[in-house]
Amino acid sequence: MLVKKPINILVAEDDDDDKLLIIKAFQKTLPKKSITCVADGEALLQYLNRVAPFDSLELYPIPDIILLDLNMPKKDGRTALAEIKSHEDFKKIPVIIFTTSNLKDDIEVTYKMGSNSYITKPGSFDGLVKVAREIENYWSNTVKLPA
Amino acid sequence: MAKIKLYSIISLILIMVGSGVSYWTSQRISFYTSGLMETQDILQRTSELYATILERETNIRGFVITGDEDFLSFYRQSLVDAQLLLDQLKGLTNENPVQRENLIKLEALIKERVEVFELTVNYYQQNGSLEGFVSPNRVNSALDRYKQIKMVVTDINDEENRVFVEKNRSLLNNINALPFIVGMISLFSISVGFITLFSIFHYNKAQQIAAKRIQNYQEKLQDQLYLLDDSNKELEQFAYVASHDLQEPLRKITAFSDLLIEQYSDKIEGEGELYLDRITVAANRMRRLITDLLEYSRAGRENSEKEVEIDLSSIAENVVDDLEIAIHEKKAEVTIGPLPTVLGKETELRQVFQNLISNALKFSKPDIPPQIEIKSVSATQDEVLEYPMLDPDLEYYKITVQDNGIGFDEGYAEKIFAIFQRLHGRDVFEGTGIGLSISKKIIEKYKGTIYASSEKDHGSVFTILLPVITS
Image (cartoon, rainbow over all chains, first blue to last red):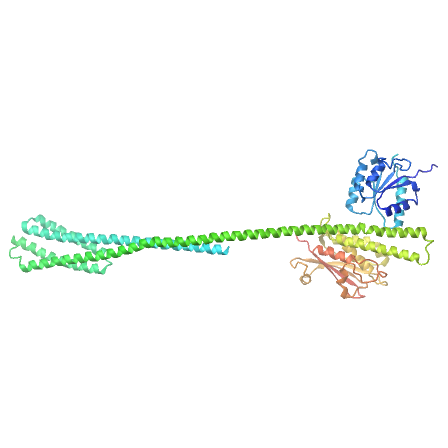
């Protein structure tokens, strides 16, 4: 049986604590190098466009899914989402909104903009681990991703 | 404005009085004018009458000298003329007793003279001459009578002249008075007109000032509204901050203490784990309080949901369905009587019933299965009047949620609706004490009221008064 290649997750998250918690949670099921973090929307777009310092394909692989926080400095999640979903190559990458907001407006607007999921950050670490497992399981086992 | 009305009325009255006086004066003028004409007429006729007398004398004289019968016929004609003139004069001087007396005197004198003339004519016709008829005595008498006639005629003329002068004076007085009266009235009217104009000017000015003031108030009010709007936005911003930014660190506190327990539980000694637990519990409670506070601040706020007619029966049934597990666990019995249809938002009314029914389940006696009865009747006028926030002109439904639970001290009946107000320790009953305050806020938004009554250990009744939908 072929060993499944782990999915690459790119996390756009400005908060260091959240970044740490998210990485910790995903590391329960994924190898460390599968999770990459950028601090804001601008860095996310630079990463996708392979602009320095994200020009090493070794260090910064093409992500299978993107976890996007909405409230970030510089370029926020909504703007980044709009840019990704209007880009010919990037729009095929599933974007999961991962935010503290549970505002109806945010949910509706981001789905309309083409996001693929909307997850409100759980309150506890256990909750976060659960969500991380579900994300990993769903996007690597349940669904088929574009090559 | 009242002043202007008064001034207008005054000037109108003045103009009317002025017109009246002018008309009256002109009537007087025409009266005196016709009086003058009459006097002239009298004078004219008197002199004509006098002329007939002279004419008769002349004709008689002519007849007795020549014997010509023509003189006699002239004489007769002048008799008729004289009588006609006398009658006319009597008519004209009807109102003047002096003249009337004079005329009577004159008539008598003329009659006397005519008698003498008749005698003379008869004598002449019988004798062919006046010989033996004319005597010094007769001549004297004739002269005397003639003088007398002349005197009376002079008297009549004098009297008439006097009347003429008098009437003329009155006429002149009236003619002179007319412009004076008209002038005075005009002056008054003009003055009042000016005062009115001034008043109008003054009034306009006052009105302009008032309008300006109202405009200022409106602007101020608008500013206040903007400020209110701003502060509402600020509150919303606050709610947003409370819901997100304040929760962020809390979430991390719990997450990291979870992580700590998970990764280092074997290294934490003594009461370390208890402390970590306490940290998590406190953080969770704070998060709950924050979300409840946020929920309270959002309760009853305008949102996209429209107020429609809501059947409370189906709301209550849905809530009972939702609470099925708790109802089953507690072996509770919930009876829902016929409930009315009211105006409201489904989510909000659902929240109210959810709070009331779950409270009734929560605060039940441990050993007795809860019995919850929900029903509705029409509120009486007295019940409506008891609550000043209700409109006494409207009709209300009185919806009650009654239970057989632990109840509470009647003294807390109002306090329990305050935000975060709890009557029991958290170790006995969980919750933040937000449910009833949210319910109250919602019911009050619908122009209704909610109150509770209870006796400790004997259950409680929560009563909602909601307005009947008017067509």
